[in-house]
Amino acid sequence: MSEHHIRRLILMRHSKADWPGGVDDHDRPLEERGHREAPLAGRWLVDHQVVPDFILCSSALRTRQTCTWVCSELGDKAPTPKLESGLYAASALRMLTVVNQVPETVTTLMVIAHLPGVQDLAMHLASRDSDHDAYMDAATKYPTSALTVLETEKPWAELDGQDAVLTRFAVPRSK
Image 1 (cartoon, rainbow, N blue to C red):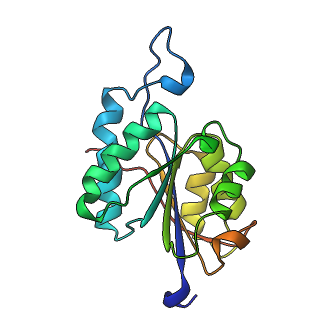
Image 2 (tube, helix red, strand yellow):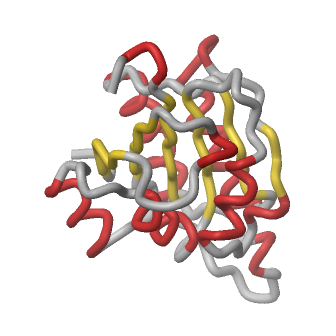
């Protein structure tokens, strides 16, 4: 792939959420661990120079809180996130439909959403040229705050399946 035309897609599962009684799933907040770990994902993006210029975030409270922490670490590099209700409880193909509508001016897109959609989408898009270890890690476990980075030369509207190289899979945690 030539550096000039590469688009990056960052798929992130929200950070650790709480299960308070009497609260609708959509309104579940992050738990204490989630508030500690979400900023680490933002720091990982900065440290690895994979900073999004566009963020799509599920409308659920836990994803919005995760996004706020990530953006706080991105600082002045953080784009204004767009809430996308279609990402809540979405299948991989529904998520792909949302990604397909992203403007072509976006070069690094971040999607913050839920299982199983984010993991299924990563596996659906990953080509045979993907990093083997990163692919296997993403395929076998996708814990909270996990990040998958995929690269493609295709326009967002043409992404379909097995047409992006999975280059990194990370689960930023405090030591």
